[in-house]
Image 1 (cartoon, protein in one colour):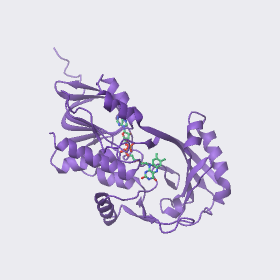
Image 2 (tube, helix red, strand yellow):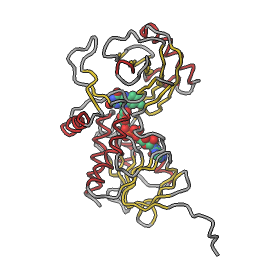
Image 3 (cartoon, helix red, strand yellow):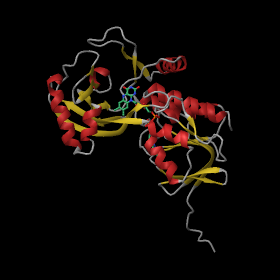
Image 4 (cartoon, protein in one colour):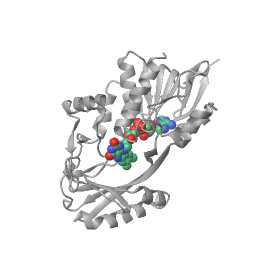
Length: 334
Ligand SMILES: Cc1cc2nc3c(=O)[nH]c(=O)nc-3n(C[C@H](O)[C@H](O)[C@H](O)COP(=O)(O)OP(=O)(O)OC[C@H]3O[C@@H](n4cnc5c(N)ncnc54)[C@H](O)[C@@H]3O)c2cc1C
C-alpha cells in the first residue's frame, strides 16, 4: 500500500522548457508565449536577468554585471524604444570625455535588472532552482532539478554559457554532431572580477560617470550615483580580462582591494565598504556566427536549441536577438 502521507516529487509537464532566465531565455519565452505556446523557464539564480545583475550594500545600489546596452538592429531599436516608453530604460549617454558624438548607450531604470523584471511579467518561471541533468525520455526532454522536482518537455532551449551547457548535455549523454561540437568548443569567454565599492563622498569621475580604461588592471569604472542607480556615492569597478583571469582563483577580497588601490587616484573619495563578485563567463571573446544552434537537426531527438550571447554577439542585444532566433526556430518545428 502506498503511504498516503508521503508526497511524490512534483513532475511538471510542459511544451517548451527554457533553461536560464537571462535576456536570451526571457526574450525567447516572451515570443513563444505570445505565439500561444506553453513555456516554463528555470533559473538557478535568486534574481532574474543572469548577467544583468544588481546588488545593494546598505543604502548603496550597484549595476555590477552589464552596464548599458547599445541598439543596432531595427527590432532591438524598436524594443528599446518600447522599454523607454514603459519607463524601464533611458539613454544614459552617447559621448564621454575623449569620445564625442558616439552612439547612444541605454541603461535600465532604476537598474539594469528592471529590463529582466519587465520581460518576466506573466512568464512561468521557477527561480533558485538548478537543472542538474537533462535526458531524453520517451521522445521528450526530462530535466532533473536540484529541489527534487522534474520537468518533462516536448522541446527545450538552453541559454547557459556554453561550457555549462556542454556539462548539461554530457549529464544526459546527449550526442552532439561533430561539426556542431567543434563550433561550440571554439566559443571562448573572458572572466571579470567586479568590485562594488561604497564611497565616503561623491566621486570625481566626470559626467556621465563612465570610464573606459586601457592598459590597466581596471577595464571600466562607473559611478552608480551619477548614473541614477544609487542614492549614495558608489562605484562599480570591473577588472580587465587579463587581471581577472590571473586573479580569478585568488582571495576575492584581496583581488578587489588591488582593483580599489588602482582606482583610488581616479575616484577622489575613500572607499568605506566593498564587495566583490567573480564572473567566470562575463563576455564571450569568440562567438559563433549563427544566431542560435538547433542541436537536434537531422536526429531522432526532440527539438533542442542553444541560444545566448555566444551566438549573436557578446552583448545584451546579441543575447536578446539570439533568444528571438531560438524562439523562431522552435516555433517553426512544433
Ligand atoms: C561584468 C559584465 C559586464 C558586462 N557589460 C556589458 C555591457 O556594458 N553591455 C552589454 O551589452 N553587455 C554587457 N555584458 C554582457 C551581457 O550581460 C550578456 O551578454 C547578457 O546579459 C547575456 O545574456 P544571456 O541570456 O545570454 O546569458 P545569462 O544572462 O548568463 O543567462 C543565463 C542564465 O542561465 C542560468 N543558468 C545557467 N545554468 C543553469 C542551470 N543548470 N539551471 C538553471 N539555470 C541555469 C543562469 O543563472 C543565468 O541566469 C556584461 C557582462 C558582465 C558579466
